[in-house]
Length: 226
Ligand code: ADE
Image 1 (cartoon, helix red, strand yellow):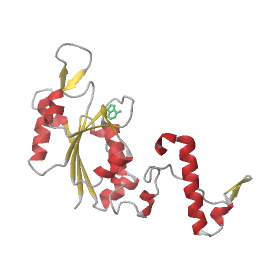
Image 2: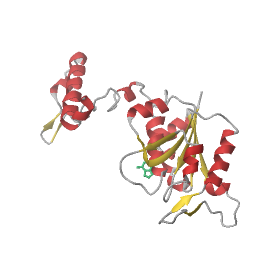
Image 3: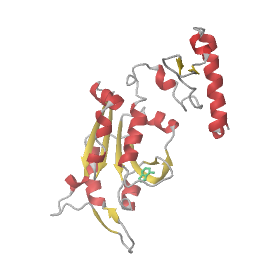
Image 4: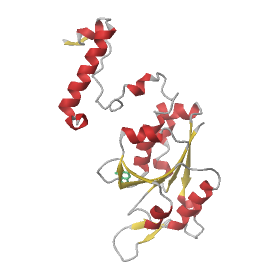
């Protein structure tokens, strides 16, 4: 079953290019995932196609209105079942590899990108099943967060990466940072590749990689070993 991601945004132009290169493009070309963009403005019927308005009670910043979002989500839900309707927001649950692994196994998801001051709270109460932040900093909108989320999920879909084991050896996949890697030349301006990697002894090489992964994690991210 092919994964389908529907992204709702007021700025689709911010989002399309990440899907037009490298691994994400290949995943789409191979038919392993479908990504559809929905411009919220296409779900308005007012003369000026407004998608946002001032907040009740006063305060700076515009808020995305419920009606266009309702129309868009209701239209999508009438066509298929969605496992998750995700809202990108800095106050969501912080994205990590475990969440990406879980999301890579579902069939259909909607991702709603917030903008300005966010969306009317009733959207979150009525439609959203999961709220995700990509980190403790504020972006201008959810689009770049959605791109990050999609990249981390799509690369985990079986068949997307050429060498199936390469996602398994990623940093975080086994709870550790990845070990250092080297390529040719074996010596560059007096800097050498560790001898063990040139030894051809794959048992010893695996042991070395494990110990380096552990060492690196202990030094840079001791919190991961807790
Ligand atoms: N929208 C604004 N800031 C965000 C963040 N840190 N993560 C996800 N969506 C956001």
